[in-house]
Length: 203
Image 1 (cartoon, rainbow, N blue to C red):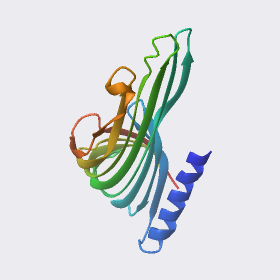
Image 2 (cartoon, rainbow, N blue to C red):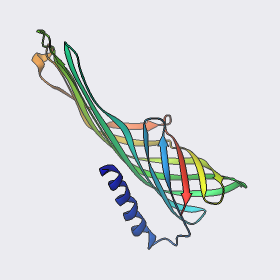
Image 3 (cartoon, rainbow, N blue to C red):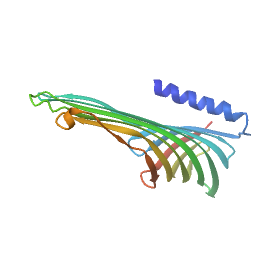
Image 4 (cartoon, one colour):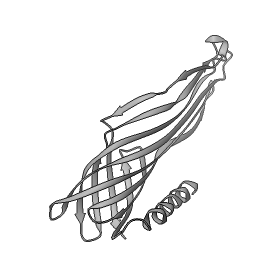
């Protein structure tokens, strides 16, 4: 419920913030799917050929707790991303629109894994990492119109970003069990695994 409330507040703020400045003649809202491991909401407002776009996605995380006679494992992960951009459309067929544009984005990811050795060896291990990533990406795609109000969209989002974050590892029999921290910062270029599918209705 907290994720849904956060998303709705985001889109309401975006609507009132930009609604007064844009001569809006079209508003859209719908669902977005990034592959099979994340989903989110999309909101667009503007003219039929030029729209502001607001995307929000959640990575389907995990919260697993497994216990056996000799080990106890926990695995927790979560991620969220937000983006704001501009989209331009051109009709290339009665039911098909070509789309191009750009997004500014920000994402957050976190994972923590622990493995407790319940045997006399006591070889406990685990890791934890957290990253933040601002970035910018291009938007290239098409819309297929399903009647007057519904449409399905396909996009590719090649982009570049800068990751900031760190990872901490530990294992009982390595470095006397002391935690080892590593830097995950660096630039990232993404041309694969960036497809987006949207199902949208006009308000």
